[in-house]
Amino acid sequence: MSAGKELWGAIYQALKANSALVALVDGIHDKAPNDPWGAKGAYISRGPFYGSSDDADCILGQEITAQIDIWSRKPSRWSMDDMIAEVRRALHGKEFPLDELALATMEVRLWRVVDDPDPTQQHGIVQVLALIEESAT
Image 1: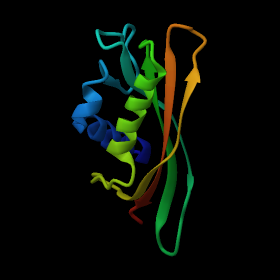
Image 2: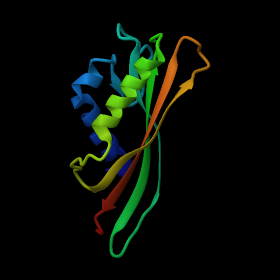
Image 3: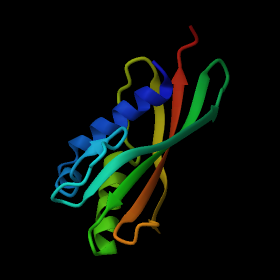
Image 4: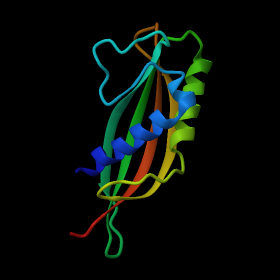
């Protein structure tokens, strides 16, 4: 399994386990469905992932930046701040078991709220940096 796929699985499970976050959003998706909007007017989707080699002495490694996108049609920007805070709480500094690889560290490195071209919605972005150790086989 790819490091990105395994990392997304751990991130997804951590987000789903945060009951305060789940109470704020309609769903958490790898790729948003055609109509992701529900009664809560907010959802989370996987954004871009990118990586680079991060090898050390006798250890194969990857540094992966994962973007978590938060979409909201709620009128207040403070509601977006609350969702970002819960995503950070669920992920920053946490250790998650991976099936085939080892997660060395996970840190939330960036978060922001940007205006969306659609004036009825907001876009929150949380970027997570994960250091992954691979087996040498």
